[in-house]
Amino acid sequence: MSMASLKYLLALQVICWVLPLQAYVISGSVNMQGDWQYQIYLATIDKLDDYYGTSASSVINTGIIDEHGHFSISGENLPESPQYYRLYLIKEEHSEFNACLFVGGEEHNFIHLLLENETEVSIKHGEDTFAPFGDYTIKGDKANHGMKALSSLVYPSYIFYEIKFPSALQFSEDKLNRDLFHFADTCAHSLVALAALNNTDYDKYFQAENERYKQMGKRLQNELKDHPYTKDYFRKMRYYGDFSSEKTSYLPWYLFGLAGLGLLILWFQNIQLRRSLQRIQPETPVKQPPFTPQEMKILQLISEGHSNKEIAANLFIELSTVKSHINKLYAKMDVKNRGEAMLKAKSYQLL
Image (cartoon, rainbow, N blue to C red; front, top):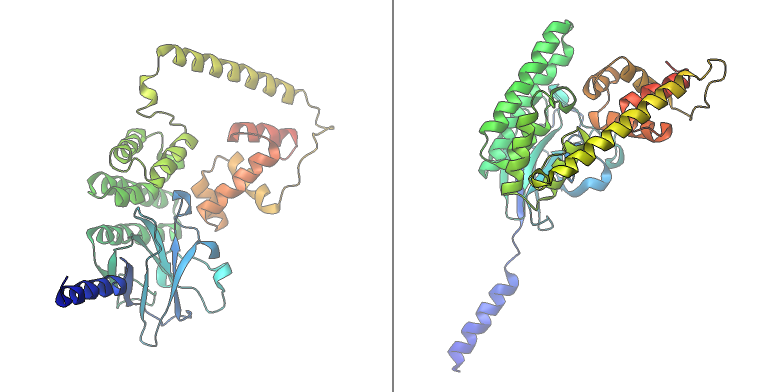
């Protein structure tokens, strides 16, 4: 090997050493007119139910915001599959351990992004608001343009919570969900479409729009079969009562007979439970578990027929927080659904 060839190979090796791995880059500007810290946070969203929840454990990167509102975050530590991330600011009086997400209005302090290691996006905050991002513009891949379009659809609609007339509230909520379903149906990117569907009110619309939720399941199976969100989506479907999938649709008919028999047994046991609870004398109530005041409020709202989303609006808490409280209630009461919880609550003389 000649000296010239050796020098060429050494030069190539040096270049390979110094070239960085593929990295994501998020840069841009935010509006700092509010009482915000000069630091920006990037948090992972590992589960669909965490779309509007945040904690210090979900933060994977941070960046400094300069006096003009400019920032830049980069890294190479993302999973192989693209997924949702939240870019957000927090108030001066908060620490990263008690950060709050503000939805809608001039304190709306976050946006959602779809990222993987090679993603590069540039964000410019809107000029006509005091919110950190406002009606922001984004440059980068089409997926994040879709996420921006979804945010423009969702967050202005949160103003319907301020409407005093119930009929106007209902019309606004129905319109938002119709728009979300249409967005999901017409969106070319599966994860952006899933984000739209994830913003719908499952409690209220799952039965009426069951076919649309099933179609999303089929789409995820075909396009993102091994993605963590696909498994999470089917878990969510099972929670709301849809147990169908392509794998189970070809089971022998005798399994359906067994399932029917199981339901018949459960129905009979439920009747027996009702009769047993009816025989409990009012003066000798069953010893109740220690409920918190918030759990008592949620139990009362459940008994009045409110959905999870209505409970969240009534108590001014996040939807994920409501679900967490309900799961704890079920565990304390040793029940599996709302019907059993109401029966137990009556036996405790709570209702």
